Amino acid sequence: MQTQKNDNWLFEISSKRKLIELNFKEIYQYRDLLVLFVKRDIVTVYKQTVLGPLWFFIQPLFTSVIFTLVFNNIAKINTGAVPPFLFNLSGITAWNYFRICLTGTSNTFRSNAGIFGKVYFPRFIVPLSKVISNLVKLGIQFLILIGFYIYYATQGFDIAPSVYTLLIPVYVLLMALYGLGVGMIISTLTTKYRDLSILLGFVMQLLMYISAVPYPMSELTDSSYGWVVEYNPLAYIIEGFRYVLFNDAMAYFSWESFGVISALALVLFVIGLALFNRTEKTFIDTV
Image 1 (cartoon, rainbow, N blue to C red):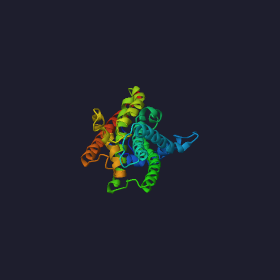
Image 2: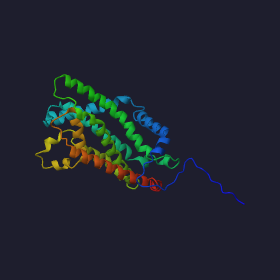
Image 3: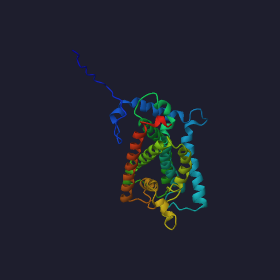
Image 4: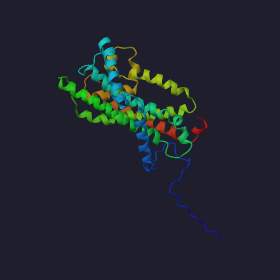
């Protein structure tokens, strides 16, 4: 007579899962690996470079100076009560976080194919680690922004925080969701179409200029091409970020547009997660 033996497994790894599934319990179990990936992303980016972490400071400052010279001094774009340099620095700070979140997650499968094919862990940890590690970079650049904010405020410029300033973390979350959602979508496509990774760098440069980074949306009221920016949700995120930061009357903000871009961020994230979960089952055969 044979006795039936029931084995109680601690973990069960299976390829059968729902498309829209985010197992927080499993991610928490692998939290040490998540921390390791975050540390790796922060340390290795500027390892063996001359200036090291100083690039966190140099890139936004130099870009803001160039934008101020070109768009404000030469093109005479009006930034209202906000000093042009501070205006550009705020837009670049917000844009950089979205950009590095998107580019960091857009190559997840190809850049991690070796480790994905050898050991199991929740694949979502990799793009999640990019978003978290980029928060550290955003924090450093935001400290620079706050420093210049205080300087210009003490110089008599009409900029001041308001109750809307409490929405800054919400806008950071929206930028993370957009970067993570679109990045996961592109990551699934690059497993078959590698040209997309090359095209992405070019597209990101163009996208910055139609996202109201170096100019306010109010400057496009008389432009025949203004609709390109008006239909870009990223432009409303950049404008809203400036509005809650400076309480700037020139920056466009409405609760209706805020609700729309928030809903769209959730939709893109869900779509990206569904494609990501489906692709992780078979990507190793195409990469």
